[in-house]
Length: 473
Ligand code: FAD
Image (cartoon, rainbow, N blue to C red):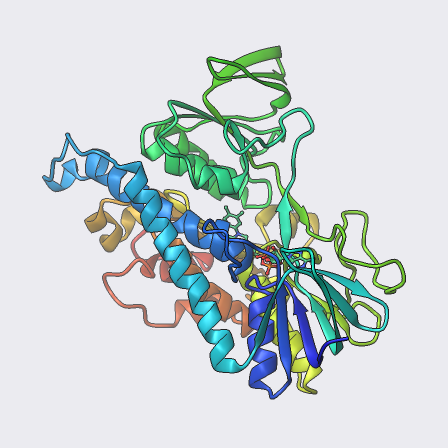
């Protein structure tokens, strides 16, 4: 048996590495085990988020947005650059540099905070013992007073469209295409499918997204998705709802897809296929039989509201437990658990976790949708305000979208805020703070917002809840 730790974290994604740093800050002897290997073949901290998720996808979204604006968006400003070209190698190289900067940054943070990084695959055994197998097959064992499971998630594979890394790819593959595919098929119109589909569409690919559900982004508010769907259609993203893929055959000329929709069996040929039908908790091979830790029917570690597994000293956080699969949710859980272990108060309010989709326009929300409020029989009022009446949005030539606020009809407490439009990824923070402080629409309506800014749409939507928006005819 090797050293004993106060805290052993399994997984160095945004849930695990944050938990490890906070535990070390609190004076606990901490180590973090992770098995991720970067593109250079070396261990890379940061998990899905930093290596093949949030950060690289945003790097490519930004590059492709610049290119698309240059070729399509700037003419209204009097700027024309019709012959602009994209060098995919440089674009992907920039993304890789950003990834390296951030994964290297976690290594530095671990050193500064005296967190020991242990590379390898971990299996939890009874009695809070963790066995780690390194890349050469050597096994070491570590004991700890507390173990935090933060193993994240992996993409779900379709049995009839298996990932081959070349033609049929997951998120990691779609971040590394060597050139713009002529025809890109995407299975799943969720966050990952829409974001990565947008990247390649902006660079010139013909993108067809097949979605099995009849609704588009079912978790978001219907007023918002209606606007988003209209804008995506204008951009040429071909989203086919209610379609079920049944076959994907890789041939010489491309990938032949067979799918069914309301009209019957259809076919489609694409050059690359991104399968983004969801992710599942990464708990395979994680638990020995006698740990006492339970998995639910979706393979997630079962935890209570404090992320405790019910077994002394064993906790779980991030994508591998219930709740939204979002980096910031996992990080908050990491901090809360580290603080609970150190005898402090730690708590995460899952009701105020913001969601953001970095498409164009961006989509963001926090709290309940109008459909949820209706279904729960809560009396409510809504106020919305379009970006087309906001001076800053008009000056930016980015007027599509709106802010919608749902407030309790009797108490005026804000129940949900839903946005689609320019930079709503940033605007949503104001709504989160207000909801966390149990604020009302009237609170937001009486707060001075700078002019001209996009945040005036939030202010006006709050005024609109009481039917007194100023700039609405
Ligand atoms: P992960 O980040 O998955 O990290 C878990 C780590 O544990 C991994 O390194 C894994 O290799 C390691 N591991 C697993 N099992 C073991 C084991 N047994 N032993 C040792 N190590 C192990 N979320 C957002 O909030 N915003 C976004 O913009 C966003 N964009 C995304 C874009 C894409 C393309 C994808 C795929 C995801 C995106 N997400 C985004 C989701 C986000 O990446 C996840 O919610 C987040 O990474 C979860 O963090 P985590 O720490 O729980 O797990």
